[in-house]
Image (cartoon, rainbow, N blue to C red; front, side, top):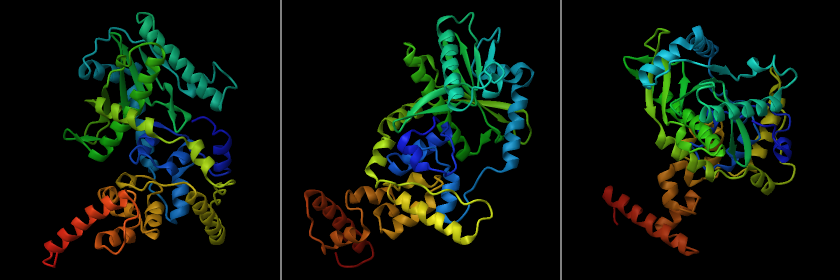
Length: 389
């Protein structure tokens, strides 16, 4: 992610930073339209730390063992000149790859050639080099690199430009680009964990969409980026790689529509009271009073950012905080999206019940429609339990 500009950087203040990545973009779009989440993501706020602070309980984080296993598996898969990847791509994607010309665009690989380039400048450099490699793939395929590792592509989110480091491999064969993703959770007896697999598909869709937008910027058809992707996983409990292919076209299309609806983070902050800002995060070992003061200040800052609590919020690090907030305000969103949708602009549970039972007179046509729907539901509920209608 770029360094947060102006008001976004002021809002984050000294709170820990966590750059936006593809996994985080995919997670944010599970609950589309949340202005609170948009600002936090655009400002590159560390959501795990913030969620722990305001809820008073640690959020689940990936274990060091899982991180080590992931790194070991990836190193094994890409060793020996990508022999494993090339073999899997030939077998599962049906690619004819007579020769591999690969290029690593990771920051570590570029530091020697570009000493002193760090931070945002390094992100922009990698994005520019990725664009050049993709353009060469599409215009001069016989001489171009046909396999790029750790590409970096820009993607607009909430009116800000995020730089996504793709922990993927992109093959350019026969005029099309194919995305390969490496994951370390196992595929046991031919099946992967459904929750993890679903998250991987959404994350890969972010990569594919960003590459499609890049191709369009170069004047090519976005279809040159194939939506059939290959995911490499360990087979059973071994480190032997296997692969599955999946067409994620539907996910890419849905993602594109959702991104177009993300509110502009700067406009959300402009509507908040002047000076709205997160506190500095308490240091490890800080006293209970210091932690409590920081938590109160963080909750006050979050209260100025309109949330949209939905069924898709479960995976968000702020879930517990927003759930408790919804309960305190007796919001219909706490009862699930089906009920919140039926209640329309009546967002208070008490007001909705009063409309259903005729204790509240509708003040506009919208409330009249809601009252009619809720009254029918209330009558059906009474009938179901044998009471008077």
